[in-house]
Amino acid sequence: MMTLFQVHAVLEAAASIDPKALAAIGAGLAIGIAGCGATIGMGIAAGKALESASRQPEIFGKLQTMLLTAIVFMESVAIYALVVALLLIFTF
Image (cartoon, rainbow, N blue to C red):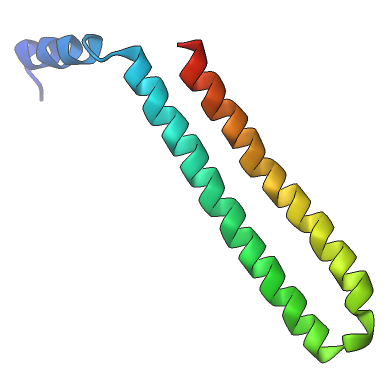
């Protein structure tokens, strides 16, 4: 159990944190996690597309179109995270 003095010390420390610093940490986390997720998703999609193209080379044109469409949607998530990060940085 925390004593009243310890609770007061924790609340004082939390009150002294600069909101701009928290916004910068949130922006970094937003773009970092979204960038990693988009990169992993694109890598998996490209790997599966190459695997299926090697099994059935005659569908490569259709597969390439579907792959590029999927990559655009994955990249849009990273762009949304960039917009959120910029909003966090410049609104505080």
